[in-house]
Image (tube, rainbow, N blue to C red; front, top):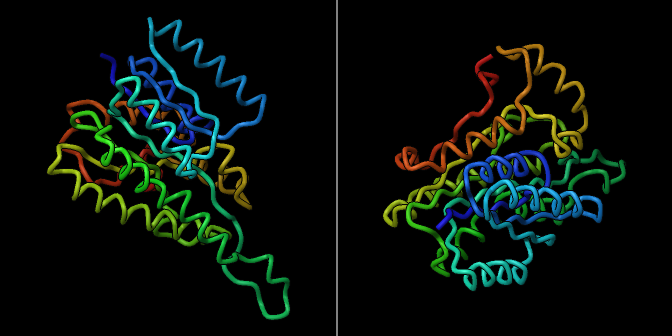
Length: 261
């Protein structure tokens, strides 16, 4: 039986790259994402290509809100009905509010983060990782020696303009992952975080000043290039292998040395 990967945020960037790489390694795929009609067609075409090239590889597409508990229930029920157990969970949801934490007195207060902005960002980029892990474990839907992965960033420990809500969520994500690693280890599973370098993705382009960040990073990078989504996809494949079973609770830079430059 083929191993199964469940990818949240699979339609672009690193989630897409991971799906593509795991398809080449023979994984069946459960892909969860939010896309409009053109994006959905692209996902359907990719799934058909992977099925044909993968010699019977199976792909389930779920164009829905991964934060919706009812949709989670539907997805996991379908997996159970097909006799699937999840070998790899990749949390690649990039949904956060990019506003300043504070607005000066007399300024338009709607220009800064509201409580709902903070809550939505925290739910999407941190709490949902726990929610999916908890649901998979409760439903006995994890394969033996399962690998749980999520994506963090340097912003968990650094301050960048307009990044406050995402930074707080990433810091919380790192705390959640440590606890998951601790509690899953006796069950034979593991949980790790990947910390990609600056990568030109649709999510990064939403950050104010992203062009300057991309240019500055490329100039100072030891290899003189940015991290690419496929770099991250390949490391997802590495971490899923049995040889990586003793890596647990780690934050692993995937940046070609960017973080040391």
